[in-house]
Structures are given as structure tokens and as C-alpha cells.
Image 1 (spheres, rainbow, N blue to C red):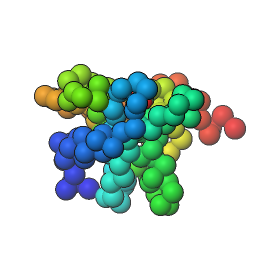
Image 2 (image 1 turned 45 degrees about the horizontal axis):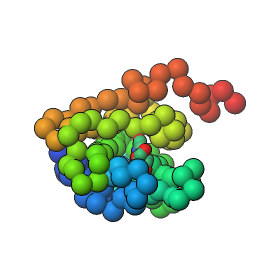
Image 3 (image 1 turned 135 degrees about the vertical axis):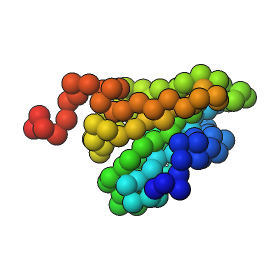
Image 4 (image 1 turned 90 degrees about the vertical axis):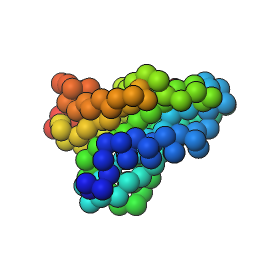
Length: 137
Ligand code: THU
């Protein structure tokens, strides 16, 4: 796991971002998700002409990992900006992605954001407190 520093995970998210399909919003997002066993899965946002099928980069990364059998995650790096610009502001995950993270991740799961200068580290608990989850069934 430690071979992926915060900066390394952000770099992978920047690489993933190059594959964003975002002709409608013009916002390109990349994500790099680190499993507890040390694998990284990448995602980029995928938009649709009918809009609602759009998938965020974070959920694409989770789908890639889940479909390969992974269920335990340590952290995710997320970067986003207009597609012709480099990220220059923190790009926090949307509420739907936070809920998907909550399905598989613990309170201390980390969300790494970058504004191109510094890395901010947030926990899932900070981003989605008092959440609805499996314990409510
Ligand atoms: N987007 C993400 O990929 N992740 C987020 O957490 C927020 C939004 C994408 C979806 C859409 O393609 C574009 O950014 C604008 O909302």
C-alpha cells in the first residue's frame, strides 16, 4: 500500500481523468481507488446524451474494483476541472458517490483531493455523517 503515496494516487487520478467522456458538461474527472490489498482501480466520468445514465469517476472506479472481486478499500483520490484545464480547486465527491462509498467503506476511508498545489485528506465520516446504511435493515 505504501508504494502509493498521496501524491502517487493523485497522479494516477490525473491520468485516469484523460479518459473522461464529458461532451455535455465539459468537466473531466478522474479517480484512483486503493484497495486494502494494494491494488489501484481507475475511473473517469462517463456522460450520456440522455444525462441521467452519467456515471461519476468515483463510481466507475468502484465498479472496476467490485467487478474484480474487491470489497475492502483504503482511500480514493479524486481530481476534476474543465477538460482543457488542469485541476486548480478541490473537487469533492457528489452525494451519490458518497453513498456508494458508504456501502463498502468504513468511517476512516480517506478521500484525497488536490487543487494542483496541496492535497486535502477527508474521511468518509466527515463527508457523510449520520448516513443511512446496512445497519438500518
Ligand atoms: N462528476 C464526477 O465525476 N464526480 C463527482 O463526484 C461529481 C461530478 C462528474 C459527473 C459529470 O460528468 C460532471 O462531473 C459534471 O457534473
